[in-house]
Image (cartoon, rainbow, N blue to C red):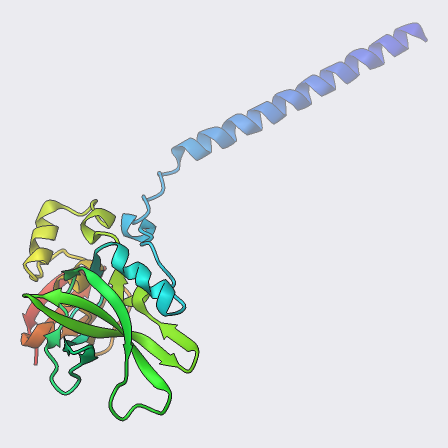
Length: 233
């Protein structure tokens, strides 16, 4: 009986050893297989950029826009007006804000837009340009309720720093409001302003029309990069 027990113990140890060896072998093969897999493509650094937001909810909180410079996110889509005698000259538009135009907002005020519904006012950002004061709308006040869109309209951090991973030549084109083959859509938006779809296509393969401040361009993208640039309508 003693010998039988010893034999059983030895057999159990052998079986346990074989099982352990098999487990270690499986782990080793799994590690080798993982090591042979191609490294995942690095994430697009543009997607990792997270611009700071102020989230203003009333006139007082919107004054935070005066604490630092601001840069225009949506170029050629924001009309600005002369600001004289504490009122916007809505009847005399001064122009459109440029893409990535830098400004110092002096204060945020409210003003009545002609023909606006009773009790509704525009929330306006006041800034200086060429020695004169101007304003543009960043939201609406209805009674005691505010809807302020400055986070969607403005950067409050220098885009050159937010996207400092872009090559120097890309930023040189952007600062000159020019577009070059190989640029991506964000870079073109920074150079030319916001574009609109010019036909079928979406995602990384599409064609967009850019008003470009009166000098329209049509830009075709292939695999997310500028493939063709031509005059627009």
